[in-house]
Amino acid sequence: MKGFAMLKIGQVGWIEKSGLDCGPMDAICKPLALAPCTSDIHTVYSGAIGEREYLILGHEAVGEIVEVGHLVKDFKVGDRVMVSAITPNWNSVEAQNGFAMHAGGMLNGWQFSNVKDGVFSEYFHVNDADANLALLPEGMDLGAACMISDMVPTGFHGAELADIQFGDNVAVIGIGPVGLMAVAAAAIRGAANIYAVGSRPNCVSLAEEFGATAVVNYRHGDIVHQIFEKTHGQGLDKIIIAGGDNDTFDQAVRLLKPGGIIANVNYLGEGDYIKIPRSEWGCGMAHKRIVGGLMPGGRLRSEKLARLIETNRIQPEKLITHKFYGLASIEQAFLLMKDKPTDLIKPVVLLNN
Ligand code: NDP
Ligand code: ZN
Image (cartoon, rainbow, N blue to C red; front, side, top):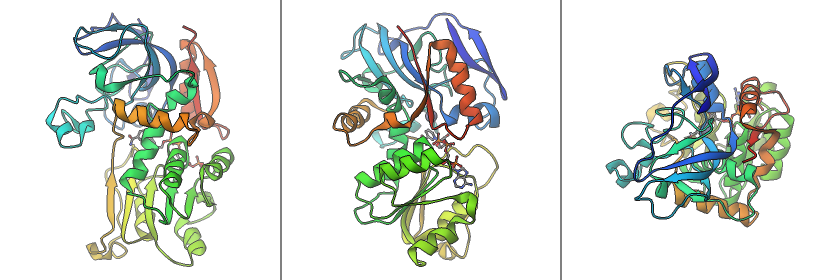
């Protein structure tokens, strides 16, 4: 089978691999919709998780099942399914501890395009199919369903990690597709003011549509100064980081109230350390919590997030600015993600199966 792969750090290309092995609890799918992720770009071009050779990329997909293992209970050949980007082993002590995404080692629930071949292929393998797949709801837009793989759950995880409560004043730093879904999640959880930090005009207008009450452009000066101007110097309750760089933590700590939470879902691709300003961190005593997490995967979560689409509480299809058709065009979509033209939020590839 043909797949679009990372050949080594900094290099991508098409490769051929032999057929996939479907274990008793697994499924083999063919893709119906695919999307490249900013994480694929960090992996290939920053070498963020180290060297990977001839590894098929991609972890965002909607698929159709072509084979199931004999122990799979709830799915059958021909089912159209939402596929989570994170596909943990749910039969693990880490899952019992509430952190299935780290089952078998830190970040190991991130299987596709990390520890095994990803979804940019004629066929892909899903471990623990009953726990990691969810039926595609009847009539759901394939692009929206593809955003359930990663963009929606990651943005929503930012809001969960930040433990947003009604009435909170919140900043979302970074309003690419992940940050935009974090804005939507913060609004659903009842945040009062939501300060969205970004610059691309279509991201800005979507942030406002999804619930941002003010937008701050980091290219126009220090965001700490800009946000404090709007809050009259009052610190924020919660901050979600979905973009920026290692210095963003410094800004977030300065912006946060004592007792507040910084929740990072950004994939830090470069550098050895992040910065925490000692004095603004209360010399270590300010109860300013910093948490960061890989999105949890799982069927229940995909089903619940899909319900939010069905009830029109979120509209992730609005993230999709570029549509492509056919597996071969994944290369074009991927390169678009690398170049990030200003009119791009998220590309999707639809396959005519
Ligand atoms: P994008 O690149 O589309 O968005 C990044 C955002 O950050 C943009 O709004 C950008 O602004 C903004 N930004 C860039 N530099 C700065 C800065 N210095 N200060 C403040 N804001 C800045 O990324 P995605 O939305 O696709 O993904 C966000 C991150 O989430 C990525 O690192 C991705 O790898 C990661 N990720 C993490 C997952 C997880 O499980 N934790 C899962 C999926 C993705 P501008 O408008 O100028 O572009
Ligand atoms: Zn991703």
